Length: 286
Ligand SMILES: [Zn+2]
Image (tube, rainbow, N blue to C red):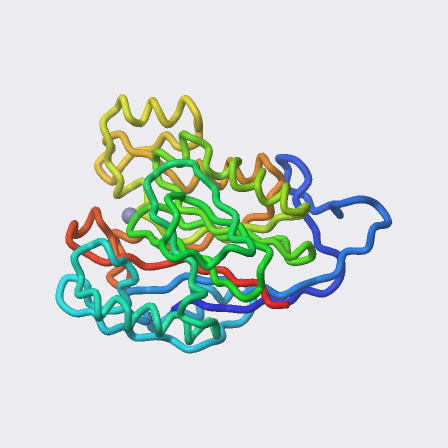
């Protein structure tokens, strides 16, 4: 599992405009304390180079759950809706909770539907069943937010100083319908000012062929998302579109490398339709 904890001293900084040059954000003279956030991405199996993948930022910590799933779902499948043995999925989820040092019941899952609904995990969380939403935001340090993916783009968000985190499942419909700006708006309602993002592995545009009309539709919202496959046919670069949306909202972005379809240690729906789901997870530390 890619899993790391960060603590940054000094003023939290945000990019300034398209040039990306750092500038101190927030109200001048207002002291911002630093905080700690655990964030990372699970894998179907622990890759030999996991530390290197995440090593550009922070240190790799925590346990590496190996997972109890077998067959098409072999490894740490966290998706309960994909046909895997429910008992194995539950073992995997407990392993994840242990690695994050939260009670199993405090792993917050969503019933993801490729929409742009954002829920706030407040005092009423954890809920008895996952809410229908593609993004979740919280100020609580005792919850770990989880988004499940197998080609879509997982996005983790944090304002460590304000103590607000979020997790987003963003595929093509989410890019077009604006699940990213919707989540950032909810985080700001919750007090976030300077937001950082980690964008996880997803299917790359070389591997994501779509009909021309579908590419055009995405490009109407996000011009940078128009791309081509390995063979030159139309494709969509969903993560580029998402990173562009984040940059336009002055979010400081770390974009991790990796194509799900080309990586054996990540689940990919495009590579194998009967497969598991890996996760992006984020948790505040108080
Ligand atoms: Zn690829």
